Amino acid sequence: MRWGKGPEVVVSPLAPVVMAAFVMLSSPVLLAALLAAAVLHEWGHWATLRHFGGRVTRLFISPFGAEMTVADTACLSYGAELLVTLAGPAVNLLLAVALAFVGRYWEMAYLFAGAQLVLGLFNLIPAGPLDGGRALWLVTAWLTEPFTADRVTASVGLAAAAALLLGGLALMGQSGGSPFLLMGAVGLLVSAVREKGLVKFPRAR
Picture 1 (cartoon, rainbow, N blue to C red):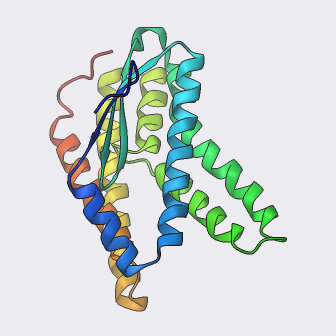
Picture 2 (cartoon, rainbow, N blue to C red; picture 1 turned 90 degrees about the horizontal axis):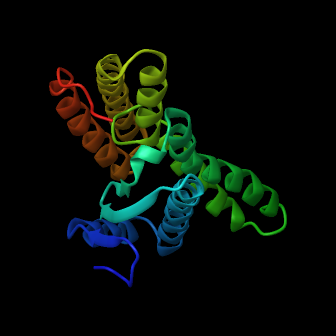
């Protein structure tokens, strides 16, 4: 789907299924808080990207989140791309602080603050498809070279995804925690295993 000259928007068929399951197992208000956090997260990326002259050509929405395809990447240095990468989590964390302050006067704001905090921190996990993984790759490539960055990011991402999976299993075993954390951990682990198998190929820039 494309609106005017904007980016092409592609939605995975599983995304609405996961949203419906989330509403059944949790609440529509919590889903709204998480969706608001996700939209503002992507806005942070987009606004910073526009500032550096980049352009989004495609937005893919999956059960695990959104992924932007960016054109004009030649205009981005390692430092600029790092700022674009960290802009999404930064927006979430700043809004979490602001909404927590609002929560003193409107209790519902604490729920929205929590959603912002969780999404911001989750995206900073140093695993492949997340902002934390991309930031780790950019910093490592900046300090060394892309091939080393591939190997470091793949290894750290695999360890982080495995730790998250074990933590999710332990949480579910002790307190019957949300299965969505476990689903996210499995998705990260699959992606990390795939990346680990491709580290012998340098990433082109």
